[in-house]
Length: 67
Image (tube, rainbow, N blue to C red; front, side):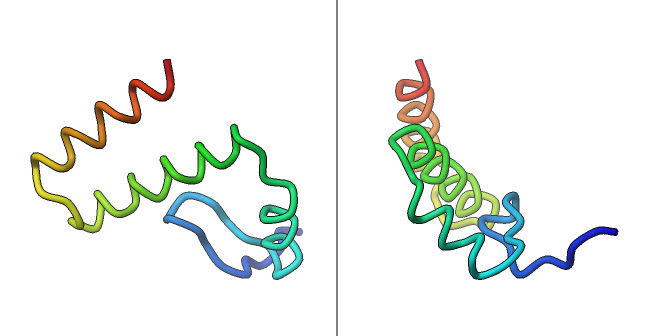
């Protein structure tokens, strides 16, 4: 049986409960922090939050970080 979602982060990460959110927050390390930052930027881009120039800068910055 599929558990009902509590919420969603950035359009890509399902939250199952308030406790799930607390676990994400309390166990975050550098790798997961970078993942969440990238997902948040992608979400903002999909919502039209950035200009074309800003999108290019952010895209390049993410590629540099992921190398």
